[in-house]
Length: 522
Image (cartoon, one colour):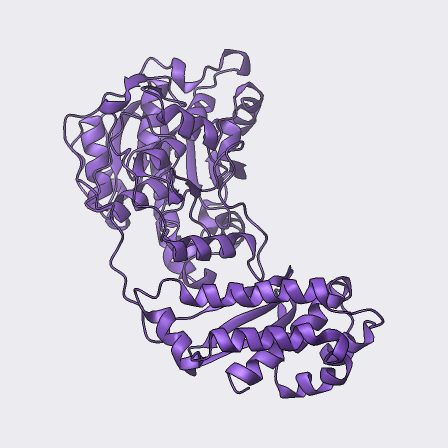
């Protein structure tokens, strides 16, 4: 039997791949207690938590038998764009990669593989070529970014794989592997007898743990998620709710109830996030696998940080030099993962206690006036300087050069002779309608609503009322005869997006500058 060790082993994604491939796990190394406990209780092992950075390779890595494979997933935190906007401490992160490569150099396995986020590919290439990892340059034969969905994981998750193993064999398996979708997973877990979509285990639903759902998203949470995904001012559009006919988007380690990255699906009465079991299966863990995090967020974190075991299974198959014609799916492995007898901690699935800071930020586009590519009218506050300072604003340009036009009295006065005529009374009617309905609204009042835990979504109701009025104006105003020069004179440049949406942008300029003057004294 071939043997292997895994460094930074987490909850056992590499170890499960070994078991499925008939490879003996000689040792696993992990520092996070809850992840290590999850690993131990699922595999009936007794690995101690250890700071891998402190390992002395010559004294601490002496085994009774030759190690054939070394694998692992050094922490990606310092390399992630999610860490301080991509400004994590890369040099600190490289300490773990150095230790990993030092271990490979000392043990001299037949094959080895290291998994991390895609960004590490370029960092690794740079550091191996004359940088801090230059001494290991000859060890690294492969630096490749793969999508785990190509290897049967029900999730589009791009990962970097570096190492020295038969990568061409791994890639040859793709044509033999069935794609598993988010819908496949949710449908499987809804049956009275659940058939594991990754491993084929058949178990009565009542015997499967962690299937309980959180409370649904609140109306405000749903709105924030929907806008962040479908109307983000800069980034590409995302589906809301997530699409069922394709592999799930990446399961992240940290996600809040209001997050562009969170996977959101329909519930019986609204929308919800994925539960623990759904996340585990989408990450490639069996329905019998148990997650021993002390809190719901700890379970989410350990699953999101894990390497998908369906992927590691195929990596180990390539290390075993299994030919494409002989490759079998994990469901045909001789290894069956038995549910451990130890009960996991119960999770709090209720609505988290909410307490918002006095300077809570609000920044959302106005319905009927959002165009993508950074071009939009929005209602926002100014929490850095004065959180009570609210107004409508216009933004244009691109993600690297966003420009702003203040919607003040100057714009209103410039457009008034053109638009505020007897043929366009709809403008005045809408301004009066809103100012009457929200007569006691001010910047201070809006901020109070936005920071209250029981505001009943008042700010979004106001924003939607404004958006509906824009729709009425566009349907009833006489805008014929105006040309793009009016808009160009305001923004002082030509822009295809501005020309394409000339009429509604013109309406936005006049209507929202009127509201700013009437309600916010701009």
